[in-house]
Image (cartoon, rainbow, N blue to C red; front, side):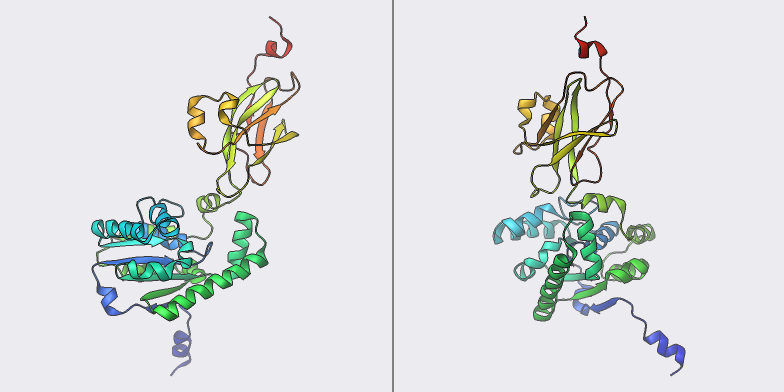
Length: 331
């Protein structure tokens, strides 16, 4: 054996194929993306979407998690899970499902799926912990410990159940996306157009901006809805449902001018019906900054930002367009 042959045989492809021929050739199957949070599951799910697979009734980019099936698995009954799966099976011979939290329920869900084939992605736990710290301000060591436990849970499932699976390295996936996309195509019972293959390859990229923005637990939603010479008001809340009410800081022409908590009832602010419709119906998240008369003048730059967010509320900064006579009371 030559040195070049030895070198070729020692290449780490970042993929282990544990798919039996019956599953590979099956015309009906469910591709299940399994992995930890911030571990690369969205990259695989998005690639499957580009290849033409249904990823759920309420699945959308950039994370491609089906809220419909996820809610049934995490909050519903076995009958509800079976009902959703049966409906997907009826409509689609092959479909895909991705949800990192599935690793906590996979033992119960596995027998309910039709010919499940697992795409299991593993990522460097330190990189995953750093991504979580950036997205959610969680301590890295604490997250690494959790990720190690989650990976052990996945490995225990693979060892006990021995399901058909592709084991995938996230780092290798980023380095050679075309190799992994071709591996995925080889699992599908239908032809894939060259344009769809290319779209899937191009979807695989490290740290896409829309994904980073969508997965920030510190991301604040909201807007400034009203300005006067002595008041700034609107609504704001964090996109992550378990975070407390947002603490907001008002900036006028770049100068911090006070903080308030966005915890007022929207109706009490006199917000218009359209604005109230954009606010969560069951969350009091209105805010009002009360200022001295005449503090805000026409032309001032008004910006409101949540204390934990890295960007201001949508639409900020706002340039005040006010009648100067209102500040003085002149007729």
